[in-house]
Image 1 (cartoon, one colour):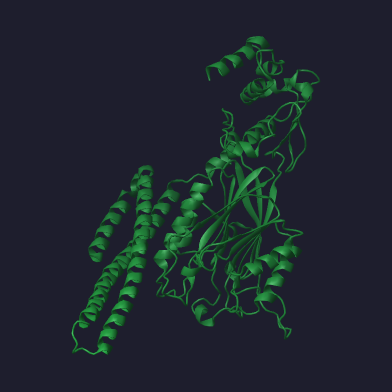
Image 2 (image 1 turned 45 degrees about the vertical axis):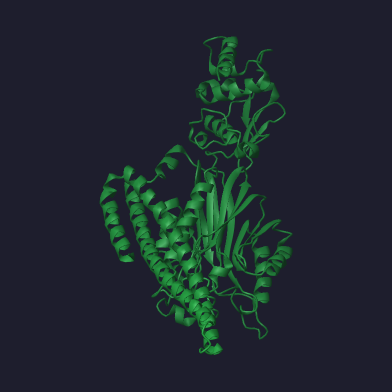
Length: 565
């Protein structure tokens, strides 16, 4: 570091001592200072140069829009043939965007980029001879990137879903017609259906991926016009119970799929997921599992999106807007809801994605919801230096293909979501105003406390199952020993011996499976509860007023533990 500092100062000294930074930057490198070091010194000094000194730089804007940037000619690097000076904000934004630094987009760039993934993505886009153009977005020109997103729970269960093949074919025609940038689908349980869609969409959607997990599969897949740079899948720790075969969530392996896109130099982390179904809202046995999945999803996004510029979450969360699962994801990550943020909405009333008028929906499930329910979402957030808004948001209204009788049928039992998002650079003030204030922090503490409580109740029930199944396991061993011991007595008929042996084996295997399932559930819930408790402690340091909430949590935890014992 000392050698680099001496060379930078040497460049300044050779430029004429106390001259303006602009003149220092335009001096050709000497034999002791290579082009690479000279250009790095030039960029660093440029960021701190006053606007008046920028007239000495050979730089000029190259246009507006997604491909806008700053052009620096090779003549300008030597101080000859100087072009008109660009707008200072445009020039600095272009340079900072090329360095891929979050603080740089806020005008605080003081160091070169690290040699990580972001450096590889922006390789070849740094100022230098033979590389004249920097792709960037001008915050003053109003340029933006529009991203058209489609989301649908397809309800494509082989041999069970009605009109599956017809609906899949119509879905492919719709995606080709609407020309979306990104299509995210759930409940595509058959890989044959995915391959059929892939072949149909190949001319327009050149990138596609199917996420595989569990025995049946996650049902998640994505189609994109933009190159997919990275993919990753994370399976949830809790996903229902294996003995509830009629629900089938445990065999599916519910998961979250992540893909990384680069759109006009903007890194977009896209997440698609499908949380555990509700089945019975009045007696929701899976509430603790769904809350644990929501927390796991929020943590996964939080830890994998630190290098992203934009976060996009789509999928079937199986949670109403007021439910704890939805609020936990939204509050912890700071996501915005497309339906709530848009100014141009078309579709079902209140943005519902399951409506009673859909012929595939069970009317009994909608008795208490005459207007339908909203459980599918498109959520977004800008991470660094960008501002994202939802220009339009639309849902389908039950229209779809025609069956053999000519009657129109819906695309699925869920309604599809279509959103147009606009991404543009944000000023420092806009980024600063997006931070959590005291009211938001208090709301987050309340959500964390509620999630902690639900997991505590689920943990108490799981521990009770552990104790009960442990006793059943002991009973199975006793019956098995009785069957073996009865073989020592000739007076006891063989039928009784076989009965004790078979009954003991059944009880032993059944209770053993339930014991392991309950033990796994209790450990997963305990871990998730511990993570939330730590998050509450960290939030309490920021907001001292949360001490009262924390003390209430401690009292509740004591009561839950005493109840489980």
